[in-house]
Length: 361
Length: 106
Image 1 (cartoon, rainbow over the protein chains, first blue to last red):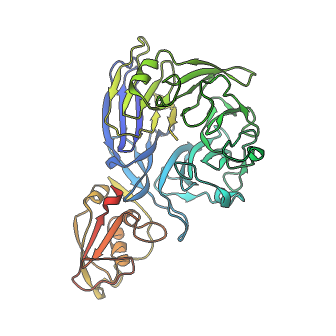
Image 2: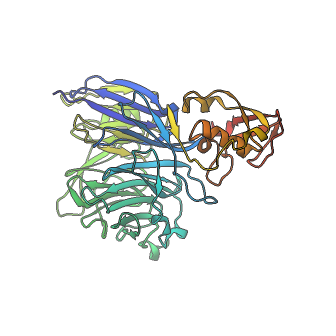
Image 3: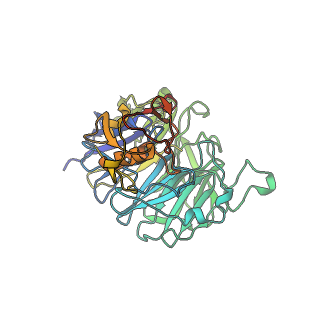
């Protein structure tokens, strides 16, 4: 059966869905969905095929949208998606991840919620905000946001989360208790003798290597890192990158042995993103500038999200261009979507509903 | 599209004894709740009570108008008889309640 490729795009002006065949030669664009709400993450649940979109509307608050018919119709809910009365209200949903029949949502200000009924209602996973470090969490430039959710693929009680700028935390008991997992990641914005604290790191994106639950990657405000032990220890892998740290490396994405990190062309030396393979057993990325998609990225500027299943990758730019080159040819079959200035998520479900996503944070 | 939200206080209880008011909803809210009308007649003693009544008709609507503090959302304004109101503002019979999206949120 011919493979159908969908790209789920969350933007500041709603969700969009692009669809194509396996050759990626032409794309059909649908949207905006979800009443043009700002959406930070759009995913597909591989088990059910349901599409979820999380975000927040300045007027109407946070919600998670659902579609069980590939975007034809949508519902939304925020039932239970709230802290206790008197606490700072939730502004927006920033991350979604299915796990063991449930659905996790990370929100701003940083906190974790879980739904057991497909996003119809939510329960606060209060243990995270009961961590002793909570009073000292500091917001990053974009706010105090739980933007990364990494469930263990087989152990439903294990979950990693990333908060800017509190760091990486891990639970082994389904969210009752949490441990900071930031050893080896640094904070260049602290005094020199305090640059490796237990928590307070500005992690930007946390991902797991497919099929390797102990191998995690993170792109951090201060460098890029790899862990081989579930985040207990982190090693720098930024050596070889054109620019070491800060915001330019928007993304690090592990696709088996391949890493990819998007860069903002406004300040990146190469004017494009960088791809590389982490050397096996070594700390550094054997970096090479993106070649085949470099043209698309340079011309479109500000690539924000990137998703790679097979080469070449699909890149979403800040200005709403989606570069989705065919595999046969390297010239990008670019589709223009008027999606606004902050397009944030891409997800690639296939007919088997495996999906890969990558987001800007 | 449909929506779900928090349900709590029982709305329109003893509605017969409550003042009847006319509520005007913001246009941007209507697509979120199928069947929702721009102008709604209901019985409530306060702005909070009116929002409870709206939530009873269209579950989830309270979450769109109020945050969990609880108070009217930052970028939503409610006017009662032309004056900005809070959840505690009392309603007189026949008064007009305007729920509006603020320009600051758009």
